[in-house]
Image (cartoon, rainbow, N blue to C red; front, side, top):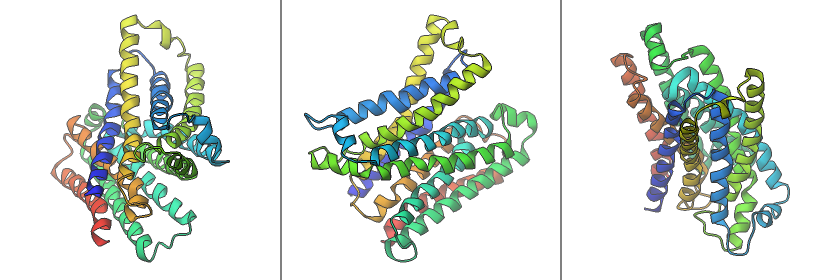
Length: 344
């Protein structure tokens, strides 16, 4: 029962994450770099700080728990900076492939690397026992992502250039796939950052923090690193494209509109990791579900993003075969989440 509750909580976070990018279309008269930087302020600083603060026991500061981890805090920030590269290319992958296909390819790659690398670094045997269950689950998830990617290729073949542009304005399959794969590999560093900051979570639990919130201060360290990378890139693009004026040249009502939708995008994006921390607290420590939780999050993100893709008609005109392949890929992802627990 606890496992089901944990999965439901992670699913709710995934729904939030996949919905966050819908807000992009509501931002007016700002360049991409302006929107990305401003939503990043909320997604990587404001809401992670709020989440970290509510996790602290009375009389304990963030500095207290961060400094207790030695170099773990700095490693978490460093992995976060690497993740920031994934965050940047993640946004571009959806620009060229759409929400459904862009997130599917990027998150699928992120799922595999983010789950298997920590297990390998811990010296876990992936060919026996729980390690084998982990490998099976990730392999099935990758298969599901590959099938969804094939659906994207069919979509590209069956649609005219006009239909592609109507569904996704800047659609570019080859460029988008390469960027999505890079985004997935670098985004996996987020989970590596969480692993590096594990001593912080343990220290918080020792101090009496709730297990529901204990991951939040670690999440904030990773998002700080991600914000640094993204802010540097966006400010450079502001300078290169002469778009600094975008922040102040719009009307007051447009500015309020943009800030509200950036804040909405930020809190929805952060909800995936807030939900991950809470959901993990319902899994048995050291279990397959705990080790597989990152892959579960990414798979659920893919499922939810494709639901948005259908709602936003990104797959409209793709043909019955393409839709059948897409649904098959989504069903495989569901199997990848359920099967490890069943086999155990």
